[in-house]
Length: 342
Image (tube, rainbow, N blue to C red; front, top):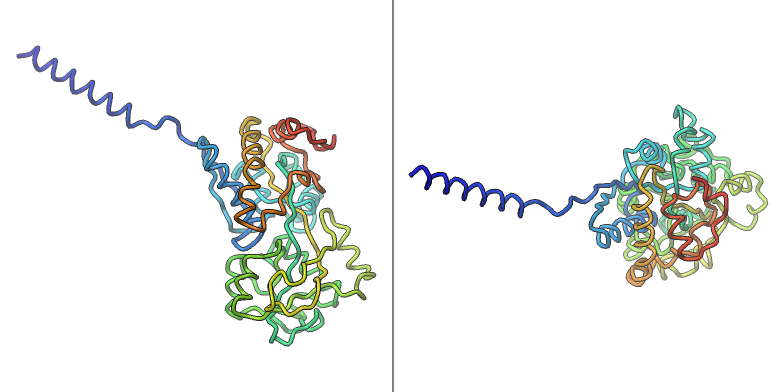
């Protein structure tokens, strides 16, 4: 009887071992975090697409998208290893290196900037300065006493919008107009609900938010008039890394956008940046997967057609990650020497 019980126990143990083995996952995906701007912005669309491509094409990785907060905070989190990817920009990195602007009170920001490496740059888009057509606001001079969303507080978009208004009119935030303090997602909804008079958003046209608004409302996009082109304060703003004048094409939002012709405004370049400590093989595989699948995604999402491999190094002032360098060399791209520093 003892032998029978012993055999039965062995059989149960073996069955349990087999069950435990078959229940074990083959390999757990490496969890990673990507921080970007809120839904409705072009960086969100591009970087969410990046995450989706990686999650679908490379099952060994799982990227979670964080779309809250400002890029200034995201940069520090990524440098410290709390996040693996974030949206940077030439100007943001310059401010971080020099501990200026939003980094003026961030101790050690310059040292932290040395830990960052780039995957690629892409056009963030054009500063949309939108108001409802029946608001009575037809120029920047009409901003006096209005409720204005500049961007999330502490972010570069906030600072840029504030400086643009001051350059064009001399108006100062909270003295001449009221600043609406919200994040990107909440601000887009608040604008649609009529609680914001002027809404700033640097994004590629056609912006998902603007496209949604013009379905039921007439809007006016405000731009930089001809007489402001020689403005020294505007020129100073445009000297920032990654900044230039561009134009939102006429009729991109249809008949409910009442401004006639192209809208001249500031355009900005941004990029996807990671921590130098992320494995070379990881970044190589991710960079490769993104560029091999982005064209197909662009057929479904018109905005993504602006993301082009030939522009990957445009205005880039952060060294490329070695894994990205490997992929670009395989593709035969001419990589500027200053971007290959390890």
